[in-house]
Amino acid sequence: MTETTTTPSASPPKKSSLFVLDERTRKRNAAETRFRMYGITAISVGLVFLVLLFTSILRSGIPAFTQTVVKIEFVLTKEQFDKAESKMLKTGEYQNIFVNALIGQLEARNLDVNVDSKSIKRIVGKPGGMIRSFFLENPDQIGTPVSFEIVASSRVDGYFNGRVTRDTLVDTRFLKASDLDLVDALQEADIIQGAFNWNFITGTDSGVDNPGGAGLGASVIGSFFMMLVVLFLSLPIGVAASIYLEEFAPKNLWTDLIEVNISNLAAVPSIVFGILGLAVFIQFAGLPQSAPVVGGLVLTLMTLPTIIISTRASLAAVPPSIRDAALGVGASKMQAVFHHVLPLAMPGILTGTIIGLAQALGETAPLLLIGMVGFVAREYPDGIASGFMDANSAMPAQIYTWASRADPGFYEKAWGGIIVLLLFLITMNAIAVILRRRFERRW
Image (cartoon, rainbow, N blue to C red; front, side, top):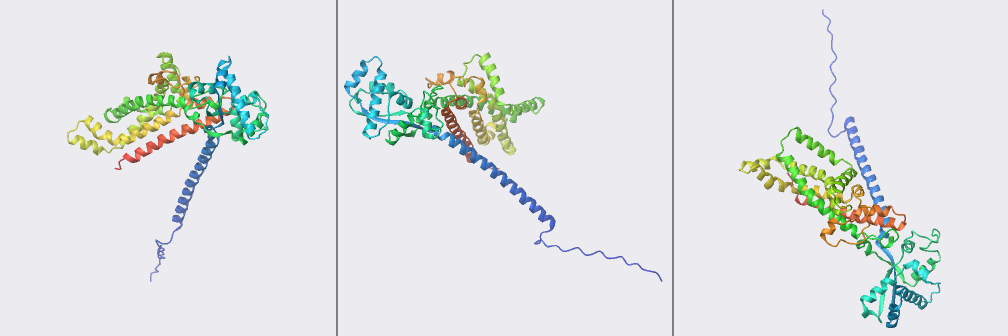
């Protein structure tokens, strides 16, 4: 009789259901949920900082778009005009006429306040020259009521904006604490009030002692001429180089070296291009310093790598079947590229160009080295040629100049200039997005 051994049978596998989550699936789902929360948290933190940044910019820059003006109406008689013109100090006589008219309006409103010519001078400066010029240009207004809006000094404007208070004000030749009583009386009489500062948009820089009269207009014109130079140089050169490298150049060590250098140039600090522009365009070529044409040439060098990289990416995104179909029906290589590939890649090319121009518009470091911060543009260019060749400033350089001045009034102007610059940048980027969405092909 033989002894038999029995082996234990294997236990049957547990049946699992698709409707019941096992342990591994629960862990995977939990990890995905955590990753999603990390992403939402990162985006939320970024949005919070973005809101704080824009809030800080708007709070500090909005006062630059407003100004405090003294509105006064008076009648200049023929006798007063003849008497003022017969004086040796004509503007001083018109200043006295303005002071007397201002005192008369305060008395008409029964406001008892000490008024003298020195305090009025500290509040509104010397409007006598402006009043004289008006009546010389408009003699028919003599003997009729005329309203004037005279811009108050920057410290009075700061008093209305909260930048200057009675506690922090120190008596200087520009403004004294006693002058604020007159300012309050003028405000109560509705003679002094706030208004939109169009001069900030259309005016020019006014020097280091007059932040209230400083404007960004000439700098906007300078940036416009620079962007024209960048556009008409970087777009054809960048697109031509991209087409050659992507479609016609042989793949060898030489082209690989060119591609590596283009990628490296895109990461070079902008101040290096400023040094190059100073050495080549100003010291070697002898072009005028601080001219928009020099700034445009420097920014062109800086923008070219960005345009070349984005254009090559747009060309590479066109399906190879487009090229093969064109070549299959008898088109040459150049016809296939220029008649079929390039039109399909044009939305991406325009998008990259606009983004490159927006980047160049906000650059400051290259402009520092070619002297565009050392020149104060107080007049508009006389014509197109002078707009390119005459010394001028640009928006980033003007903002840097205002931020480096001691008067707090220029600090507000710098923040206001940042708002204008951001509006230009946002507009250019919005145009790039619209062009991409409008003309982009889905393959």
